Length: 111
Image (tube, rainbow, N blue to C red):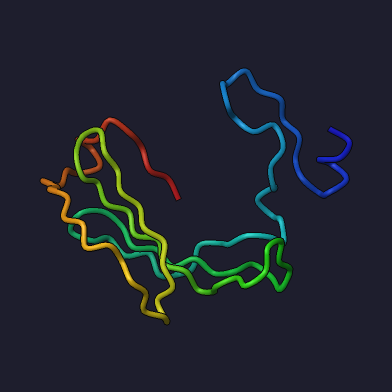
């Protein structure tokens, strides 16, 4: 707990299996925040994430980053993170996706 709080993190013990007890608070200078561009798509959402500050934990950070969320089936969600300014190779894998609405899914997505 002391090491966690010394890093400026939040310590919150929980009974939930595999849930972290130490994590960055919402106002942390690290990580990403939601951009203004939240777009509803035919199968889900497309959201822009922007790096919070110049601080970096791992280096070579990308900003902005796009998060695409696709409600594929009642029990399957697909998410994809990518650099919108740089093309990269993606495995050409075709996955059948009938597409469901958020109301039909057995899971919740919150931003």
